[in-house]
Image (cartoon, rainbow, N blue to C red):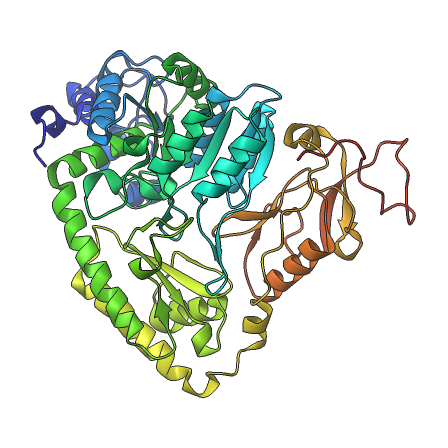
Length: 515
C-alpha cells in the first residue's frame, strides 16, 4: 500500500511541540502549568515534554469543537486513510462515539433495530436520544456459549416487519472478533430506506491489512465508531467516529459530537490519535502482517493442547459469523473442567498472564502489532502448564464450571422505553422477589458488557436464574447498584398501579410494551 506523502505528517503533534518550544509563559490551564507544579508521582507517569504539551485551546492548537487548523487537518488525514468522508476524534472512548453516532441519526420516538448483544453504551444512547429499540436476536454458537453477529435473514425479516425503523445498529466485529457480512447487511438496510450504524469498536485495525475482515465504512456503513486504543496505538479513551456521506448529514454529526464532547479535551489523547494514524500509514500493513502470522501460529499450538480449543476461520462463512479477526484468540477451557473465571485466575496469579476477558466457558487473549514471538511463546507455555495441572479434573467439571453452563436467556419483554424508565422513581428489591418487576438498571456481566436485562425490561424467572448462575460462575457484574446482586433496582409503580404482595411486588405497567 503506497502512502500519501501527506500521511507522513502528524499536524496536531507538530502544533503541540511548536507551542512548547515557543517558550510562552503559561497563565492558563491546566493548573500544573506545563509541569511546573506537577507532583513527583505525576512526573513519573508523564514525561517532561508530555507535561509541557498537556495544554489546550491556544489559537495555534485549534479547537476540537470548531476545528479550522491542526485538528481539522489531523481528522482529514484519518478520514482519508480509513476510506471515510469525515473522521471525528473522540476523547470519551467509543462509548462517546456511539452516543454521538446514534444521537446524530435518531429523534425522539424513532425506532431503531438493535442486536441483543449490543454493548451497554448503546442503551445509554437510547436514553439520550429517547429512541425505541427493536431487538434482533444474534446467532448464538451453543457449543462455545458465544453470541456472534446478525444473520442477513434476521436483518431482512426485521426490516420487513418494522419498516418504521430509522436505522440498524450493527455490532461487527464482536468482542470475540467475529464479523457479520456487513456488505450484504448494508444492502438490505439501505434498500429498506434505513441507515446503517456500526459499532466497530474492535475493528479499528481492519483498514490496514487485507488479511483482516473488510472495514465497515468500505462495506457500506453510514457511520462507524472505532476504538483506536484497543488494537492500535492510541491512548486509552481515544476513539474515532467515521462518516460516509449521503444518508447522514455531516453537520448533524458535528452537532452531536459538540453536544457530547468535553470543552476541555485532553490533547495528549488527541495527539495519540494523530500518532496512531501516522503509525498505520507508515507501517500498518507490515506490522499487522506480522501480528496475524503470530496469531495463526499460536492458534495451531493451542489446538494441539489436550483439553483446550481455539476456534478459527473453519467456523466462519456462515450466518452471523462471516469472517474472523485472527488476532482475537478465544480459548475454550471447559475441556479442562474449568470455568473461564477459574482459568483466568490461574493464568494471572500462577503464570502472570492477564487475559482481555473471560466468560462462562472461554478466556480471550488479544494479540496486536506490539506482540512478539517471545510473548506468544510465553502464553502458549502457560496454557500448556494450565492443561497439565488439570489432568486429574478433566471430565469432572468444577462447581463454577457447572454454574457457567447456564444458557443466555431470551430477551425479556420491554415495558417502558429506555428514556421513560431512566426518569422514573426507583427502589431496591430483593432479587428473589424481582420477577414481574420492571428493571431500573441495566445488568451485564463484564466483559464483554452484554446486558442480561436493560432498564425498562421486565425481570423474568429465566433472567433471574441466569443472573444467579453467572454470579456463581465468578463473572464480574456491572451496571447493578448492588454488585452482590442480593437486591436489584426496579421501577416504583405509579400510585394507581395494582400492587401484589405488599410493598415489593407489583405488576408491570400494562399497555406500554414495545414489539
